[in-house]
Length: 449
Ligand code: SDX
Image 1 (tube, rainbow, N blue to C red):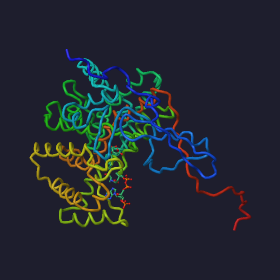
Image 2 (image 1 turned 135 degrees about the horizontal axis):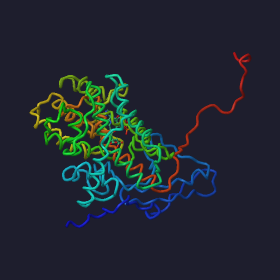
Image 3 (image 1 turned 180 degrees about the vertical axis):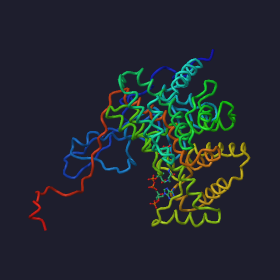
Image 4 (image 1 turned 90 degrees about the vertical axis):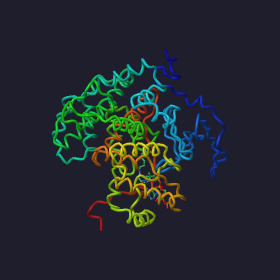
């Protein structure tokens, strides 16, 4: 009998930031104050030290950090990214090892529970998730209200919000069993909503999941099958599972921060996730994989690449190379390497290695990686650069790419929500640098010029 793996215990493993130890203090000298403001420095288990600025307000100051480039919004035990080293760890395990040896549902367990499951825990978790794949009738009926051309991300935002309506009565977010049931339900239902959304666009009806298929196989079946005879290609199914894994969590990115901020009001967790979906849709974030394909189509042929690279470098031109650059990775995104391998496997399996989009992407990547502008700014391909080409080859339409990202990211979102609400937390309420009008009196209309 395999020894239960480290951290397979139930519930989130979380060190208290007070245990992180205070390495030392930062001293902030401000003109007019007769002594410096002492700010404790918190020591992480990995990564940069953090200056705790909480007491600044009491001294009459805010900090100013648009885009939160230098701000840690919370403490967390779930995922660590080292942008310089190109490292991504989920509960300490490197994404490369997980993508190679694990599977998506096991990664969901890891993100939620803090350790790898024993065989029994894994079987129980999978069964619990699989039992929740059905879509409530009310939510299913909604799909017919959308026009055939409705964007799938708008539909997913609406359907996930509708889950909030369905699962609100009796939901107690202070109860760990309710929190875990919500997490399992969302992980289970997202691929069902994605498949329903895709089939609506094709004028096809809902197809119930099959008990003999795993998570990724069921996604392919409920999305593409005409009937029970649908053939699952194991290479494609493994690729889909790996794509879900590569998108599962990524620390405090824009959509996860949205889920945390929405969740900090105590709102229904399904609504917080719907807010995360809305944030992910943006082309600077999860919408980038759709934007990569649109960009490659716009470039049109390898002969035009140099012209578009010049546009990307032109300050006055809004064009950017989609799928390139990252707020945190100033080295290769470790997910992009795995995604590139998966892309080659899928295209080889389908006999389309010379797919013109892939040829163009590889040429664009080579040119950009050798160009001073990109080297100087440490701009590398991110996870979105190759995911779009892979998904297109699998038969997923471009407008569905971010829906796949949504399905993959759901465990990360709900793990962060659960980590936050499992302990005492404050409502998120940033302040501002006000540059507007100073106080002035109202002028009746007859006295105005
Ligand atoms: C995801 O945060 C996450 O973790 C996100 C994510 C996750 O898993 O949740 O990893 C998923 O969102 C990946 C990123 C997908 N987005 C794209 O691929 C869109 C294209 N990339 C850019 O929009 C941009 O790189 C961002 C938005 C991703 C990051 O932008 P930053 O950190 O705000 O960087 P910046 O805009 O300040 O750029 C720094 C410099 C600028 O030039 P200078 O002003 O210094 O001269 O780099 C340039 C930018 O103009 N630059 C690019 C570029 N990205 C940045 N120039 C050309 N093409 C690009 N793609």
